[in-house]
Image (tube, rainbow, N blue to C red):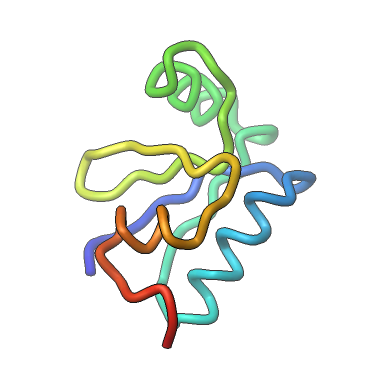
Length: 84
């Protein structure tokens, strides 16, 4: 699988659930806290039509938000099974 970036915040429950979902499936990812990176926050705003939606994922140059978190949606976007 390609490199996955997850734009998130430390206080977001949807972000926690999404990263837990990835970890449980052994999927490597890079978490980027947009509260600590103004450039990352700007990117999230740009790709989400001015909305600060987290988690936002980047995969192969494609961006998508998964907020609210839905495991089925994330699995479909990443082309992985929902269950192990």
